[in-house]
Length: 193
Image (cartoon, rainbow, N blue to C red; front, side):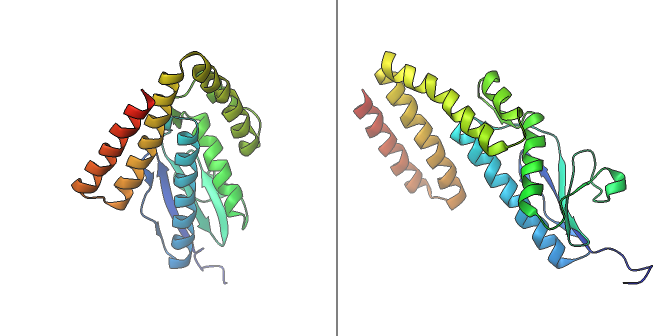
């Protein structure tokens, strides 16, 4: 390209509500940004629900592709490195992992112990820290099962159905389908008692 050709780019803004629609001047870059943004959103939701929490507010993080390179900016919307964007080359996974780590450090995981969040924020390998957090949370789950088996079973049922409600919402389930889900939940609660 010549001196006056504009860099092709596409960007999404990540918030606790998910990835925004893509903006940019290149369809290919916008599609790539949206795919990475959706990957971020799904991974963050999965991480939160695996710990029995939810996704909380972490402000806004820009994720996109500029000139073929994945970029993340935690302090603005620009994908230019001189304006604070981190460059990950062609490594979409590294860009998503970095954005997740930044979101977690800003409080993206709600409804879990502070000590569990401390584990997630420590170290640079997010997967390793998640495994430690799951082991840590497992102690309390196992203790509850030993000391309060009925309460533990009810909590397990509630957690399972909370996940199913999310799936039903995504599926656009009908009122009749929701009623069947609640009927099953009621049966499972009775079984636990």
